[in-house]
Image 1: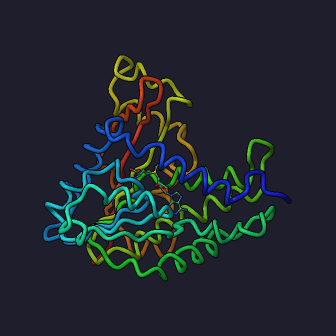
Image 2: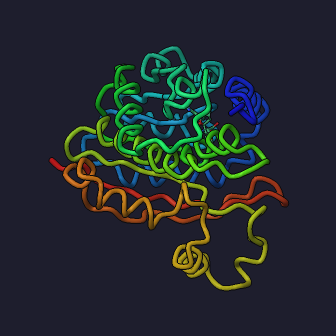
Length: 287
Ligand SMILES: C[S@@+](CC[C@H](N)C(=O)[O-])C[C@H]1O[C@@H](n2cnc3c(N)ncnc32)[C@H](O)[C@@H]1O
């Protein structure tokens, strides 16, 4: 089966998107404030090291604020240039404390799909294992806080673009999706020091899917989000019910994580036409 969108084309699109959004700090402002506060509020006492997965240009966090709390911040992304841009505004001293891990594929998909596009379902646990072994080989260290910066929807975009494009359903999609989600959660757990906190920030719904303009008129944000989650309206790759189930059911995650809870829900207005409903879930790694 031929790739609908070649994986290298997809990678180029990712890089172009990061390049295009590099000057968009203003549009990320409210989102950045919320995500940065969620990280600060969740950090255990005496936290020294933070790891941001899908850090990109770091438009969605305030590095100067986070540097007041953490000794070291580790940025992980597939896009080397985006991480370069994220560190650009930092002082010489700050740069020694903000470490870039570039060219790290957090999905395992770029290697997997480089020469063949599978049509048969892969076993999610095997894929998750392969992904986490690959990523952990990149020596990313151990951290008191690990954050997934709206990465899950991006990884799902890769899957959909490469496996399906706009043409037809690929029977392999659902098991790849499960494997990639499981892989992300296992990576986060592995990167956490005992007692550390993982934060999964996800864009649950976009204005392309649902009318978010009148959300305040319709009632409060919490009730709207509760209903959206209850009625499983969020994309499957970011569905909080599914993420909680994976944390509960996967034997590795079940042993290693507890205290799962929602730590923030907010509306991110990019432009008057483009809005996202974002939610952050957190879990704690067992001591
Ligand atoms: C939604 S963006 C997060 C925004 C980013 N934190 C910023 O402020 O620019 C997701 C990020 O995930 C990265 N990404 C996408 N697929 C990836 C992969 N397979 N491995 C590592 N990073 C990936 C993209 O390069 C992008 O920087």
